[in-house]
Length: 387
Image 1 (cartoon, one colour):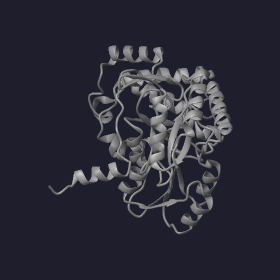
Image 2 (cartoon, helix red, strand yellow):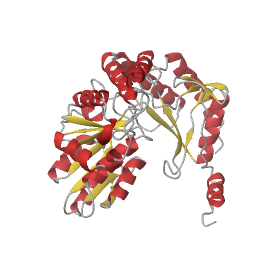
Image 3 (cartoon, helix red, strand yellow):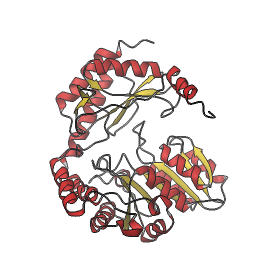
Image 4 (spheres, rainbow, N blue to C red):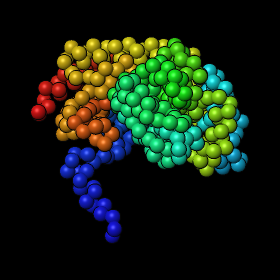
């Protein structure tokens, strides 16, 4: 056989990089049933605790009664239901944009936006720590592609000096493995000065940051013309699934006509759109979720500092605890799991070599007692790591 799959898998095993799936017998919530055992989870992106909310569940059930269980066809054939349209309009209003467009995943949305906007002869500049979907979108587009140093404005400007023609600057709003924010105001100024477009994937910012949960762009008080292309996902703070792109009427119409992941994908189930409308409503009405989450973040960081734990700087629910090697990350994860705490190890290639970590994520569904349980377990386990 031409492909030596055994060798590739063995290389992963030897390098302590082989990934395994967990088997859950419970919905997303702080206390999970994992492989038959109860574990307190600190690894979900359900930042506002809406994935198992009874009103969201009821909206999904009612949506299924009304619309059935499948989209049936692509949006451009017969899959675009009225509830899809209502959700797109609600998301556009929430983001302060003219229109929004739904996608089945954040991966599809990022590929769609980049490949529809740039091609051969154009350029794409990306932050070095951008999500894999953004990198893949740039590679598939056929455009000239370069990455600037993480959050480094000087590096960005140096790359721009070497570019002629149309350029799309792409960055995460909140970086998924580090939890830090991109310097969006400065990047937006550079983009406007260089006549480039700025695209922000705010998967981990929507619902969490900003006065009303509007995300990184709202957090920095930026306007639509500062960030012409805005990506948001629905499977994290919104607690459902899918993604959307928000922008001008012209941008969305262009995506409808030219974005292949949109044109050639079956529409997501209309019932899911009904559930997301409810989660959007809860996100806006129940401000206490963001406030409680902020309290948990502050307490965790203070507790970790008291213990001398090497956290990366982050004001978001993503709190990375660096271990260095993959072996140390796996050891710490196993120690915590033996004490009923679930925080899986994050290893290369998801993060750079030598920067393995435990990616602690907090949710508004966690209570203070559960957070203290995590800190207590970390205090006990950290000192047991071998160098």
